[in-house]
Amino acid sequence: MKINAQDVRHVAALARLQFDDNEITLFTRQLNDILGYFEKLQEVDTTGVAPSTHAVSVRNAFRDDIPQTSLTQETSLENAPDSEQSCFRVPRILEV
Amino acid sequence: MADCLYLMTVHELHDLLKHRKVSAAETVRSVFDRIDAVEGSLNAYISLEREQALQQAREADNRIGRGQCGYMTGIPLAVKDILCTAGTATTCGSKMLQRFVPPYDATVIQKCREQSAVFIGKANMDEFAMGSSTETSFAGPVHNPWDPERVPGGSSGGSAAAVAADACIAALGTDTGGSIRQPASYCGVVGLKPTYGRVSRYGLIAYASSLDQIGPLTKDVRDAAIMLNCISGFDPLDSTSIDQAVPDYTRALVPDVKGMTIGMPDEYFAEGIDPEVDRAVRDAVAVLEKLGASVRQISLPHTDYAIAAYYLIAPAEASSNLARYDGVKYGYRSRHSTNLSEMYECSRSEGFGAEVKRRIMLGTYALSAGYYDAYYKKASQVRTLIRKDFEDAFSTCDLIVTPTAPAPPFRIGEKADDPLSMYLGDIFTVPLNLAGLPGISVPCGYTGAGLPVGLQIIGGLFGEEKLLQCAYCFEQHTDWHTRKPPLG
Image (cartoon, rainbow over all chains, first blue to last red; front, top):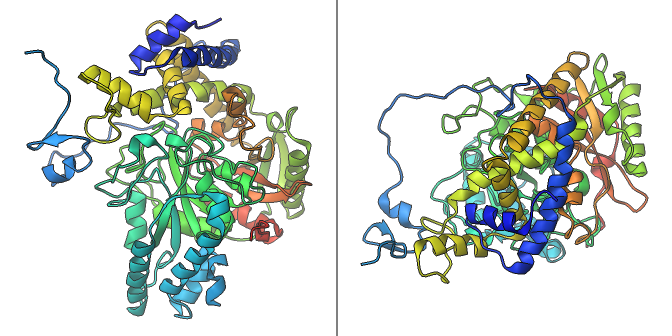
């Protein structure tokens, strides 16, 4: 087995996801199936092979640093689940 | 004529609009009448924009009146709901973005607007484009027009089903691992994934940024060329778009394959392929050979590792891209939390569906401390070898032909509990995304049960012209693309 229920809980915490016990059981089984299949990659000799992060070679795309108009504050807040006084409002972080 | 305008292709409709034989407004009404008749059995759309579409059609008619009829002017389009449309909800098939109204247009949408195309609605899709069946949408599954008990493919299943059922004239989709080509194959329409960097990704909600590409789903090859003309080109807003001149792709539509060398990879015509699919694709290759193409067997030796590499790389990128959905600035926010950290977790857990969570988990695991080299790095090295397979193949042939999918469309629910078997079905489409290559799926036959089969034609980087020429030539000598599904 590549991954057990405890590992799945650890990864869920890293990904900021919560699962109930049934979901943990299901995901443990499914992720093991999938990770087991991925083992076949180990058959491939990749000694000295450079990894590809892109299919087409790309270079850094620089542009001149010229101020341009951007979204207004009002537009930026239109999709906010909660906002107040031109700010995104979130639950309290610090205890007072 | 007005009652069958919905049946038209882009180029047929353009000829009528340009000569003012029909108006864009009556075309839009015809398409909406068709949608009203078939949408109940398809579920191809997440939202429809009747009033807005009629308004856009009237603007298109005014423009045509001024003698400014572009190829896309007045053409009713379905847009996959992953492309941002300013002022119109863009949900990505997810509860997470159910109420998201983008403040800006994707570049491809802007380009269509510049020609006064008409946007009739946002097409249904797998949640965040993660799926091969359009079953994971929060708006419910899409049904295949050829058999409503079967899937239309995915993730652009709504776009493909709408084109096949004439519930739009043409559609935009996106393709990260086959999400344009495979649903095109399953629904019996044409689907084109351009070379990575050919079309700007600005305003495309990211799934796996090094693989995602936007392209057309159409009723024939000429329409695919027309739409590619419209959406292609360098965009400073997408740092991976490539600054290379855009040819007029319709000029490549010459019905001739004489002198072309077409490669058939052994690995794609192997054990595990459905016999009816194998037969139809081999017959299609025989047609091309009869028309003067020279066909040769080739080998793409790392094909068998493409699925594993893809399903590590794509979820790894997805886990990073989808980290932005935290319930703070936009998207779903859970009400079941008392502090910030809990708000992140509850919003993500309630807002995302199972397949999206599965891929976030896979990607997070593959990138986590101690596993990076064994998974992500290894997959990226195998990606290099897959790219090299294609480079070698294209030194001896102009194009490569394969089946688009190894089997005909499966039943809704059939693979729902077995994600790995769903992933394995993407074997013929993901290698192109890993290598950045363009590919098109065109209808090339039907199974005994009347389900469509697609032929995939693969070109070299920026080889869209040759690819379109071959696809067009095939289409001109066959009539598979003219068949219509048995809908009411």
